[in-house]
Length: 124
Image (tube, rainbow, N blue to C red; front, side, top):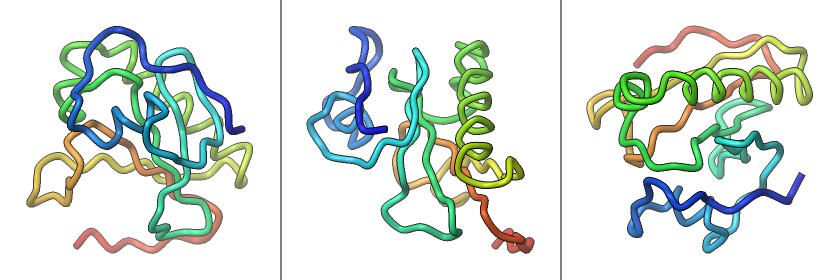
């Protein structure tokens, strides 16, 4: 799926790469969407299926999103499950990095959906 609804007039950061992707200013290969979130292919895949699920609105990390908009957090998890079901066997890993020491490099909350293979456990 390569169509999507542009970001709502809510929370956004004009310097955020993910806000620019949602706005259509930076290209990405979208695979699915929901009213509040989009899913697109990661540019550096670490598994046969590696997608990012992000909210259309800007939240810095998963803790901020969960505290201020738990319904949107649930919507992101639902979208992750949907794309994993569509593109793999429905079994997936959903990873949220929070902070630079945890590996967060873009400060717009995003879940990594990894699927399509037997995944080992390599936390560091």
